[in-house]
Image: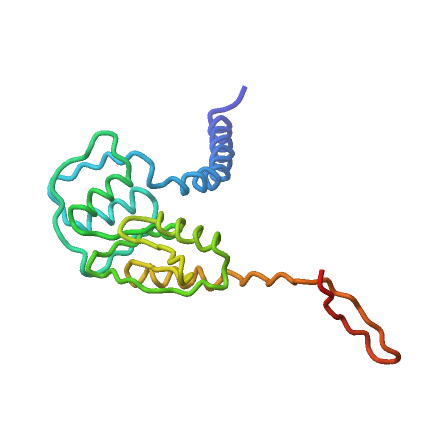
Length: 203
């Protein structure tokens, strides 16, 4: 029969094993949750609170970082909407306070409509389908930011704050230029003692 001290040690050991398993499981669960972080229910009740505080609290509740520009200001009044998600809550705040926001990995970036500008970015080294994919992907990052493709010039028209413009530029910088397909087949030619040369023969 186990003594009181032995039973206590046994309970501590079982608890330690359970905590170890939980710590191993949490990263996988968290990774899945990140993809839909704004789609989760967000029943946050606001009576009267500073806008920036509401946004910072949103980030803390969702487990993401929040970057807010200085021009963002105001007071939030009112309660929640039935079955409202974090995305719906953000869009409601944006409509009421002229906000622009986008989610960049684990960071929510919030600015104002007045900070938006439109820049033209050359992506002529990419094929048309890839340009359309980039425009669609980045337009879906938030609210008040847009990326459209100018079919005639092959350029992207990027609308958003400076932080969004910089993020687009960084993303495009890592897109490798697609290799130009060769119009013929290579044939190696040997001429006497000269080094072999490869020439292109039309298909």
